[in-house]
Length: 482
Image 1 (cartoon, rainbow, N blue to C red):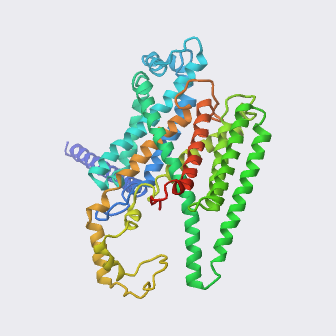
Image 2 (cartoon, rainbow, N blue to C red):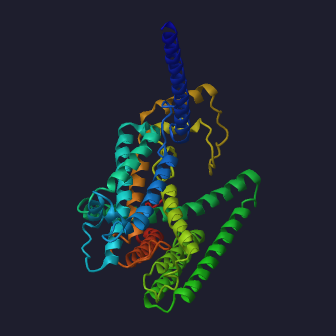
């Protein structure tokens, strides 16, 4: 009996030790996994360092990437199965509910193709609304707690995935159609206008940047050394204009013969010529490089617009559905959407501290600035370079003030606001602004008449804005447009 008790005690002890060992190994594994996950998508800076306006940008755009992928899966893989005669309808208990949820609000009973298009649109709205809600929620969180943009990212990704999964079981009407549809249209229109303003600003900044480098070369390297930058400006102008002319010729050859396409291409050519002539003959604010950039951008938008024409007689590329074109189409759509999300959330775009640093100083600060050595190019200033270099002690004090200054925390929410608008914009890009029509396929997912018109209207807005920047100083000479 004593032997049996000893054996039982030994077994219990060994079981406890084995269980403890397994638990310890599991705990180490989970800790290591959490550490790896946190290092990949968690905090990257101490909480004492103030976040910039683009803090959390990489992780936010990665989440936008995930939402675009989910939207395409919902639109072209899930929605076709959510039809009355497809796989989902045969699922036990929830099959009929899912079909009704995804087709609710799609009043096209006599046309199954349009019902499927409507269901595909609702799939995009599900992923887009999840991303929109996510960025709105954490935009408010970043406004209240500025470091929120770089905290708890593993939990944020999990929350977003739960939002996407939960949206599958929500009926289209009324949340997605028409409520979110109208929200997305409004947000997309705001972002489209913002996009054109930024492009015009980029065109001017490019020319100003290279002229500044030419001036710096003249100062640092001697007379005549800035000519290389001026030559680069002329070479860029030549490349952009030659590329634009070639693009217009190709569009006439490939997409010509159709009244709509011919009108778009001709208007692009005429507007480009008008802007360039006004810039060369009348304007004092524009430059040839800026005009060349805007001409190339207008040509690009025109080419994109005519390629979205759903009329097969106007679009010879329509209907190509080989495996290669499907892969290329999806990659181009995803890359263009993600590049938009990335480029328009740069620190300068969302009001980062660079802009605050560039603000004009007050009178009380001028004396302080005059005794501080600054970086960059300072023109027409004989005292530049003669001031004392600040000491390490004063530098440390400035760094401490930058860390503790609450005003440097104020812009981190703007990243979320921009990405919320981008979420609305990509929903409209993939659904033709919510229209239910016979559009493109998975090889060209954003083909459609509304998409075509939105692109060409965006081009007209951009060119008219640029033309206004050229003639406004002439029409209102007493106003400061600098």
